[in-house]
Length: 369
Image 1 (tube, rainbow, N blue to C red):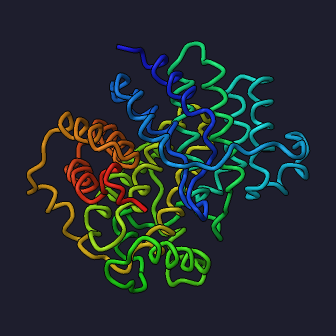
Image 2: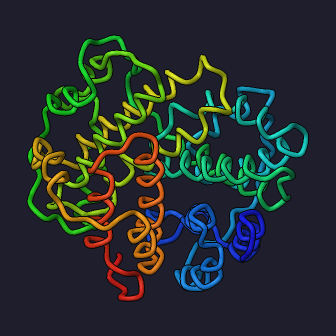
């Protein structure tokens, strides 16, 4: 069996030429490095080679090339390039230099507070790709150039697709997370929107998020608690949200779990004073996901009881099914729920994984748009 480090580095070398995104409208993110790292984490390094060959068959955009130098010490230089995807190559060049000149933990601590307001970047994939890269370099005594390059690319994608949501979230309220989710008003959606229409509706809603009822209030309604505990409450609650909403496209709400699970990977590498503001930014993203992608509570009220009564295989079997399924979202969601369930067991995790494996088409069938 290949070691974790060998499996990750082999995958990164095979995926090195792929650009950040794919799709006619650049709406699909390159999941290759994230899913390959997840397979290695799950102990399925031997399956990565075959998985990469299947994944590489999906056409990706070319790698971006640098155009203009960004100066990390000059805020006027780099801030104007935040959210400018045409500068993705410049951002990658910047972070390659940063990681060549400083230890990776210093680079992460320096840039995390500059980027965390833009968790919406790539529908959360800027932060998630960065977190997978951090797990990779942190799990290896001597990270390879390929691993450090992947960290540079995660940060670069986050910066290039950076998109801030309006308002400043904080935890100064009295409500529990579950109560805040339950009380958030939501505009009605049409039933069973197909993916292209669902994307258009969600983008329109995100564009007017600060004018949607309940958005501003929700940013401040949750009571503060230990950041790690709040992440646990988030992942469990949003596993239930995913389970409850069978009427909508089955991928976007997955990120309500995978984002906080990814943030948990990063928190140990950040100063304590960054922890609660980071979790507050995750909550803001959760509010936006709920308002943009759901049109009501659906079955959220009964999700926990449904999960308790459901027949679901053990996680070992769910992992095997995820590897066999091969979809990158299924693989990452399964690992995130496994990890979260290991910290604080909740039946919603396993049942949500089983639901995702059933709802998301197998890639070979060509049904994923």
